[in-house]
Amino acid sequence: MNVIIVGAQWGDEGKGKVVDLYSAKAEYIVRYQGGNNAGHTLVVNGRKTVLHLIPSGILHPGKICLIGNGVVFDPNVFFEEIEALQTSKALADTAHESVRVSERAHVILPYHRLLDRLREEHAAGGKIGTTVRGIGPAYEDKIARRGIQVVDLLHPELLRSKLEKAIEEKNVLLKHHFGAPAIELAPLYDECLQLGERLRPFVADVRSLLVNALRQDRPVLFEGAQGTLLDVDHGTYPYVTSSSTVAGGAFTGTGLGPNFPAKVIGIAKAYTTRVGTGPFPTEIERTEPETAERIRKVGAEFGATTGRPRRTGWLDLVALKYAVEVNGMTGLALMKIDILDDFDFLKVCTAYRLGGNTLYDLPSCIEDLERVEPAYEVLPGWPKYDRTQIRGRGDLPPELQSYLNFIEAFLGIPIVLMSTGPGREETWELSDPFAKI
Ligand code: GDP
Ligand code: IMO
Ligand code: MG
Image 1 (cartoon, protein in one colour):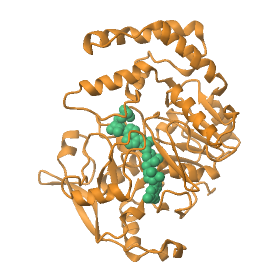
Image 2 (cartoon, protein in one colour; image 1 turned 45 degrees about the vertical axis):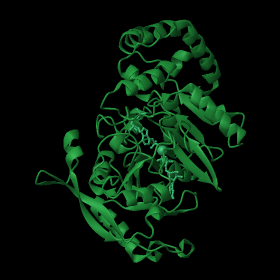
Image 3 (cartoon, helix red, strand yellow; image 1 turned 45 degrees about the horizontal axis):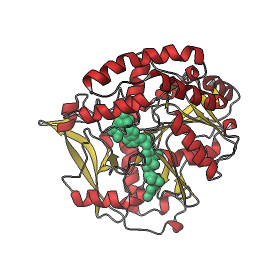
Image 4 (cartoon, protein in one colour; image 1 turned 30 degrees about the vertical axis):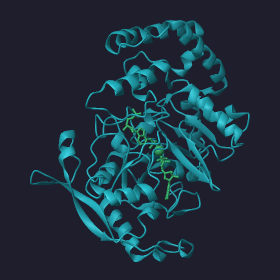
């Protein structure tokens, strides 16, 4: 069996932890979209590693970690991450044997980062609150058919004219719209050539590696980044990232068809957070500031990429049910349950109210989503409990069991994993998605 991991909320749900854990059972781990806007945190033997680009299977020796065509790839960040992993001895000097990058992935270049920053600075009202890593501008170029792919960096004779084409319009924009200096071709070309040479041993036909792996029944783990509600088609547009964060992205982002056996596991926190701007119906920053602060403090809710405080709120089951549907989710991993220990009561949103109507689905109109009022079910909280005494779900405090049962009944899918701490060991696996049926 193969497993597709997707973020079920607005990102930062704990995907990195689950991917690290599940990597023990996979042979190939592949990132299929996004770029280094991701910040995936792994805590192994008390030691924290934050990965932005390299798949979260890297701490398991002997696994093949792949970066698929759907990713926007910043070579400098890639090499920084490789070097940091080598310094900490997590990765051998022969890194290219275990880490491969698709020839077709699009490259993030300095002008993408520059444009991302300038756009955010010049956006009067509607700032997205991006990670300023150049993600949006790099995907724009891909769709506009003027992007630079990894394979282009390996062909000096073709690269110059492609770069020329890529910067032509940008220089007009930079000069006349943003009042910024133009991009010079020569130093950019030289930088790209150097990066290409360094990258050469890592470049591969990732699609064909994966096709062979699947033919030989080797388990593949697909690592999503961001979350369903940040998806460019299905998220809270325009306050989204620029890629397909949903399970469908695992196919387009690797070059595989949907005809291999796979489970889709959504990762969700027991509550909700969001970084950046955009609607967030169950947000409690204004309505219940003390609870928001408590969750942020106890849950260490600060961005793993930008360090920004995350906005916090109650669990939104309307949005989560939507995520179950758009991803074809087969199971849920519920994370950070420990952060909700010792609350008198917990709220879960089961519907939205809008102008006298009750909605059971996410409205497509963003202005409507901004205006909805959450309708809550109030559930009893559970006291702190001794986790060393828990052997199975039945040993958990009854209020916590009710919370889990409520979520499962509402969503119609099982909770396959429960997480009560950042460490690998602070996890209960209730069923194994890799198991052959
Ligand atoms: P990702 O982007 O989905 O991989 O998530 P992040 O790494 O950005 O954020 C999740 C944060 O929660 C990280 O700091 C994790 O170490 C931490 N974390 C994950 N699961 C748990 C959990 O069950 N309990 C606690 N307390 N922390 C967790
Ligand atoms: P992981 O993989 C949370 C958000 C940004 C911003 C919007 C667009 O760690 O869950 P972008 O830089 O992608 O153009 O920003 O998306 N965002 C994330 N929020 N977790 C992430 O990744 C995110 N990646 C992007 O805050 O609102
Ligand atoms: Mg993150």
